[in-house]
Length: 94
Image (cartoon, rainbow, N blue to C red; front, side, top):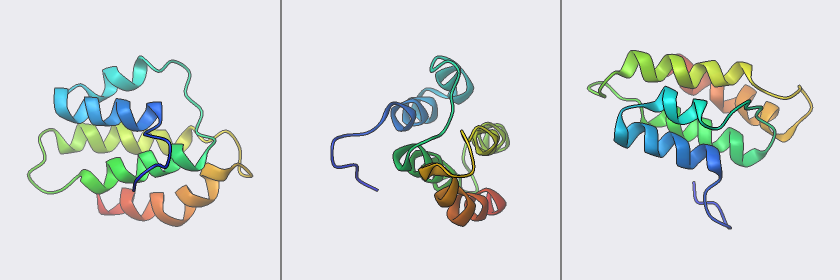
């Protein structure tokens, strides 16, 4: 998905983590992360979609990304609905 004003910091961290092989470290650098926005949810969904058979460290990356599903600020924020609808589907496929 393209973001109209560029990528948010979570998406950038996920991309760097995939390229550099240190996804967990990239996400830790963001500090106390709570998913709130549509862009946050889209970033997690994008990351989960990238996990395919043959992906280096797929299990580790899947654990890190699915762990983000527990970091939703609350059930009423923008991120919650998207992650309920698509994030859990992508997580199950990973």
